[in-house]
Image (tube, rainbow, N blue to C red):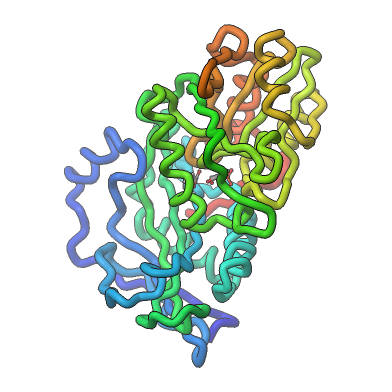
Length: 363
Ligand code: PLP
Ligand code: COI
């Protein structure tokens, strides 16, 4: 039962060959390849969490009536396992992901998964698939825990059966062009989340509703879309899959405050502390789109960067909208972005002392 849910381990009898795996790890890209195993567990209203296993990665068989296909009752997390120079494998703030997973679950009327069970599933998945954690550069094993309503029932109500699953995908850079400054498209027609909605939850619907705007961004020659608040269409919220930071000409650092409609990024939260460690003052406040446009034009805004697990820290080169575009400084990214980026990566890859106690050794 739920209180001490433990994942049993059923090794894959047909894992990838060493050669196949080596070929994948040589150029992993993002989200295209998966390790030999996955974690899976079931919840029912009658029996709570049960049948928790690490088993061979493979297709799920689901009735076409499965509720998630119709009503999108689903949540996910994104986190990474890092290989250190001594070949040990580490997670970055996994308890924060476990806690956010349960906040998302609560908002989507899904059952909470005990944090220990969430962590147990990932530790066991990483241990058995340790060979899938790439080495070198900024590579990692991207972990994708998710949960969805799996009841084959068309009534609109919280699913009486829920599936938890976690998969692992060797990862290089999220952006196909690598760590290059990105162009941002401002969506003025579409919004991502409204007060009282699900913007602060990591749920599929937020991403589904961002796709048209993201496609528009690509059409416009941009890499990511930026969303404004849904009420005044004035305040910068976040990108489709990343939070934003701004560095001003007096070396202060600002990021949009948590409005209830943006995702509380764990990278965002970590950067608040890292920039303070680096000696800059940092503020969470409302930032208007005019402040970005005018600040980039006048030089008041010196640097802009995007942050998130998949994207790490990526400099923003410019902001484009229907009718104009403004470059940020020389469009190449600046020294604060570079310093925070190094500080974060040095911690994650074990090259710096973990003064905040953020790293967990898995194996
Ligand atoms: N905002 C959105 C919409 C995201 O999808 C993500 C990615 O997870 C983030 C922000 C950054 O969150 P984190 O730093 O926890 O990965
Ligand atoms: C992440 O950074 O983990 C994300 O979830 C962003 C995106 C890949 C959805």
